Length: 529
Image 1 (cartoon, helix red, strand yellow):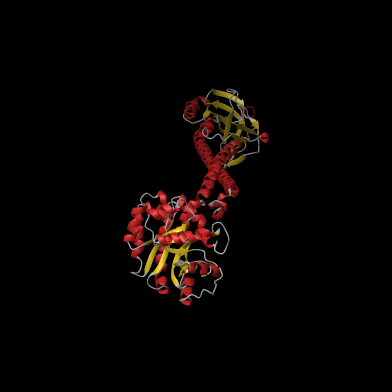
Image 2 (tube, one colour):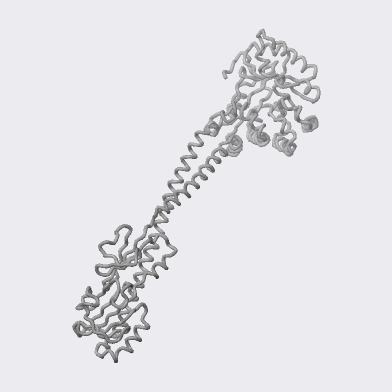
């Protein structure tokens, strides 16, 4: 069973992480697409309103200026064409967009800035103009002189004369509008509507106003003039939607992949361990260690525990080996030291001087650059001559540590004792006993459980105890659970015992209370696990 299956099942569950990532990607796609299309629509609408306002302002300014010029020409209607023609031609030459000015008197156009003398009935010239109005306009395909080009006629009647005034013929071109919007492919059309006809960007000929499309149309009336403008545009086009959806899809895939990676990374065992240290998810439980002969408390072993916020209690035989394999055991051990130091004041009150304080130490920690500093800092925070610190190192992996002999000697010089933990469960255990100077041999619970059983491994326990005595090592039996085991170990002069027969591992408050109530332990009283 892997560590992920124990305390990060949701991280190992690829389907769950993938489902979350898909949900994030879909949510991002919907939000990003909606926001982007909204912004495009809003920006286009703002641009269109700006365009409409700008066009209206231009049209009003132009027509107002044209009306002023025509007012200045108005007195020429009292003169014959020969006398008025020069001034009339001059005005037309310098009037922007004007094809010709025509003087009208009593329903007859009698003088043109372009052709000079003429005599043509106004009804023949522009039949749709209401000549009785002070101001009127007409739109037609062409004029007799230029029939192929649409023209706008602007009629300004003399205030004091009947059907007398000035007629201006304007060249109609939508090139400025098209040029203005050449960069905007989403402004598809424009129409100038006068009366029943309209000039549009859809084609070169006039279109009946009734046939103008209403879809995507915005109509704008020019104040004080019989003229309206129609703007045709789509704030959102099919191309906008396609590009937005494509871009959103690419970004959503990237966001989903990134979220999936972050989920896996954030919920990985390595990150969980580091996060657990930072968030104080680890804590210490202390298991009392007893003198075998008197069953009085001799010390304790500090055991690190992990309460994961979502996975609950994580077994130490899972996260400790994983921390060793991932190079996190040094950081975890330093955290263990800090937690022990925090509990030292209470432990010192509960235990007598000389009490054994067993701390598990990973063999890989021996060659860490910070090893000496870590140990020195721990010992500096211990009360002087109160605890005998015993580092428990498993025999598994010792042989891989080339500098173990030097480090063990250094530890002894610091006043620390060394115990080989889980003896007999690794490989070549006797090599370690011969090579290293060790103080304690901790007998694995697997051997203790054979007491009173007729098994092939039962005689091994006697051999281990005998070996330790010959090597002048003190012995500690782990996993003691029955009175029969206690009697067996007492008969063979094992030095120390620990196990559920005496007490399960306890939190600091429970441990202090246990010590206060068990100054001398009666081996007949069994503590239930």
